[in-house]
Amino acid sequence: MSPSAVLPESTRELTKAGVNHTIAKTAPSLKPATNGTSSKLAELDASKVVFTQNTSPKAVPLPNSPEVWAQQTCTDHMMTISWTSTTGWQAPHLKPYGPLSMDPTASCLHYATECFEGMKLYRGFDGRLRLFRPECNSRRMLVSSTRIALPAFDPIELEKLIIKLCSVDGEKWLPKSRPGNFLYLRPTMIANGAGLGVQKPREALLYIILCCFPSFDDPQGTMVGNPSNGNGVTTAFLALDRRPGMHLLASQDDMVRAWPGGFGYAKVGANYGPSLIAQAEARSRGYDQILWLFGTEGEITEAGASNFFVVWKTKEGSLQLVTAPLGGKIILDGVTRRSVLGLVKERLGSELECVERKFTMSEVVEAMDEGRLVEAFAAGTAFFISSVSVIHFRGKDLEVPIAEGTTGKYAALIKTWLKNIMYGREDHPWGVVVEETGV
Image (cartoon, rainbow, N blue to C red; front, side, top):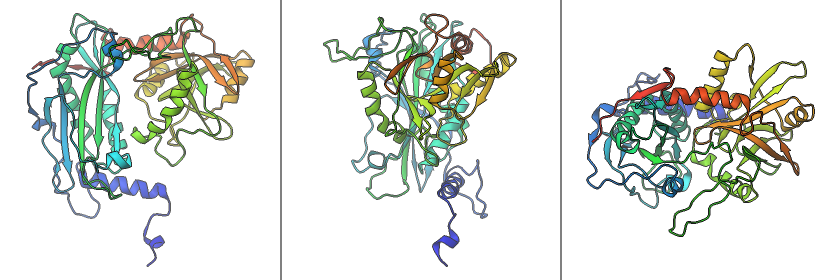
């Protein structure tokens, strides 16, 4: 029998079949095997955490200090969980933060078998620690890991491990005396087994770290340079003499971030590395991020690594909040994106219609020319809700309206709603309280 007679007809079907097989084998509680056989591999289990206390704790840097802007200072502990194709997931270890050791032939160093998540741990104004919708990040990481042949896991167990690390290090690193601050959470999975063969990984490492991180959503603009302070620490600075808000450089025809049938929807390293050279060049020219366009029509996808929104009036006079759809698997299903759409539908449904559809840069230019463009903003974990004030497109800087001087009206409103949930000013199920245990 020829191969075409037994294999799925399309690459998409192959990918789907491969993902389902991976889940059935490595996390059978999520998707039992259909052939009647059961997997013998151990599944991820947060109840088996082994804790080793850090006996050489570090000092906590001041907010907005050079150490914070360097994004290199992590908390005292990290979570690590090993996996092998013969035994499955081993016991999680909550241990002192430190370097990883792996063979130079490790798969992740050669074949981009790596995925991650971006989250934040918040110190509320009520004194409590919170995560924002951590179940969404955990589920998305499952999508990412299985897309690149890494093992599956129960997202609930990952969420428990995230909360465990936060409960131990949050008390010290987000002191109650500094409400309104956050730490950046980075769950990561890598294929760390030795061997240069191009094949499905036989070993993997899941680890979780907490990092001191600056706020990139300042209304006066973001980092446009990186001079050294003379001590080897890179310090960001703000361009206060330019128009407030994000400045975006629209990509050209020879640049593309993601494509249909690819993996733009998964948070894998291969989505980010190739975009860094264009991002660096954009920053050298005074822009914050690339506005990624796709296809000959200039279809708008994402702003840097964030989702992109516009508010405009239709030609018929109705007000719409428009963002790119998820259906083509080009766009990342951002947790902030999902939350923006949910809150607007719930709280502004009679005023502002949420529309998820393909739209082009030409449509944005037309809305500008006709006075219908109200505002634009980027939404993501790092940049949060950041109003866009300039888009460079086809040789011209196009100025986007900013109704309130440093931010758009709707961006400011949405940002306030989200912050109230994240920092405990509003009791909401999206704000998951972390009980502090310390060490």
